[in-house]
Length: 421
Ligand SMILES: *Cc1c(COP(=O)(O)O)cnc(C)c1O
Image (cartoon, rainbow, N blue to C red; front, top):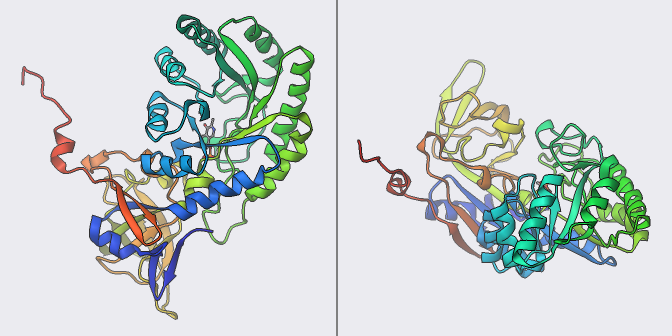
């Protein structure tokens, strides 16, 4: 459920007409709903009720300061994957002991920043990284809390680019090697080995891969405890999928996911951490764009929008589907027609949808891409020298620009000319 609904023929974001935002900020833009963000966070928090737990929002999905602050005020921790994200989380007021640092390539500088500013734990992805965290911690005179990310060799049954839990993926250490790695970690004086981490991929639409992975983690917990390690926290990653279309089969709900966690791990008396990103932000955001031209083609027409692949890359990168809806609700009985919906960028990849059935549209009509809140604005670029598009946050009947559109001079003047030119 989200808070982008038609009222009296006009699409609203909570209590604000989307067209009113478009008139104020211009198109294209992203708009997020506070109520949807909070609702999705709450679903996870409630799903784990009765267990000692923390929901750490994977902020790579959408990392605007206003989004982080909204979730942090509701009690969310943050899962970060870079120094920039760590500093963003701190700037949004998240205390260090609620920030988890994930990612396969943490540099010594990133580790130092996090250890100095406070960190809940590092999710360690390799033995060389473990050595570096140990060295930086000893140098700073602190002890770094860590889990080791294990790769359970489970097929997440998702798009190849976002599957992370098979042995051929670059993530984590093979679960079969875990005992050896934990034994070594326990000898390092700069580390406090507190738990196990696993994350098998994104946009999972079935529970079964989670079940297989978590069963392996449960077994490993018991093995490691028998080896003398004080395993007290399990970080279970993110990855629960969202419905991108109204028609396809609905992915499992957070409450079902929570029950699975209780079933597979509840007997272990551990603290549970999860790192959802997409499910919190995905359906909490729209990208709104304007039709520039309707161009007649053979067999179908092209809708040429002012938004492009640089603004929302998911269709080009992951063959992702986004529902696209007109901002003015179509009159009942209008015959839909097939359109290829494209942006102005000079690549055939800049195609959002092919032969998509839409009500008849004309130049200057507004359309909204649903489910664009996660991996949307954060993956945008200035390809074709198109400035990053603004982000807007709605809260009830209020809205605010939370990142403004840079002007062309700002974009151009970031470049510098060497003195020989
Ligand atoms: C990307 C990522 C997540 C979030 O995944 P979603 O599919 O957005 O829930 C969580 N943890 C790690 C380690 C990740 O890389």
